[in-house]
Length: 268
Image 1 (tube, rainbow, N blue to C red):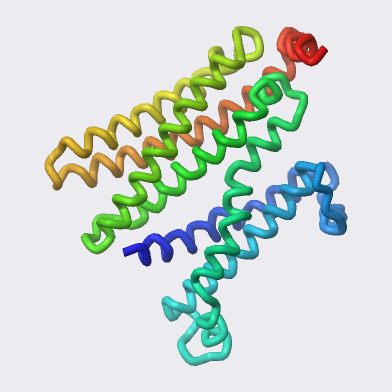
Image 2 (cartoon, rainbow, N blue to C red):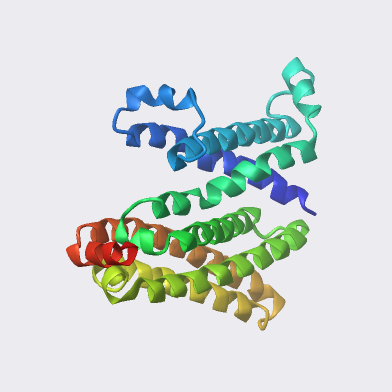
């Protein structure tokens, strides 16, 4: 029953990470010097670890997508490449992908927390777990939607929905904790302006997705799938708002002298 999840997940992971290396290179101050980051591994540098984590996940996602394309006959059946790919063990590919996948899922939060930006620095230990929960809920929601309404994927969708509910619960708890921990000064971007509206939307979307999943279990069978599909769409929208609120809210807090003073006073 897990085969449909594996098939969709392999293609989705590759397509999702495909623009990552290009966006990272463009985001650098001197993009043409990107290759210098591949010369060393600095364990104390979040940027260096992130580059190698992105490369590791990109390579394993590409290998998984190639293997799935071979299984689906997209590369032919009898040529040498197809025969070679079919020799790659499924469990070996999964094991090789797990560590860089989990690392990359929470890396954005860890990288933000490693800065001196007041909003991010105040919640440095919470941002990594928050982004990890959000990545898990988003992945489960996207895969659940991709599997569609086919009866043979019922067990797979149920498993994904359980993962989504657990991840959404953790996400909601962390969202509330971050808002409370940030306080009235540092957390001002999470309450006011467009960033505050986005953060409120992220919290509301996460809570609504959980409520819809709970409601689906009380409805007749024919209504469960449409309701859970709406829940997955709401979860994806909430994940987008979460990232927008934290990224732009952090930039706004960096321009607030009162927030910088509050963080500086704590460090002293």
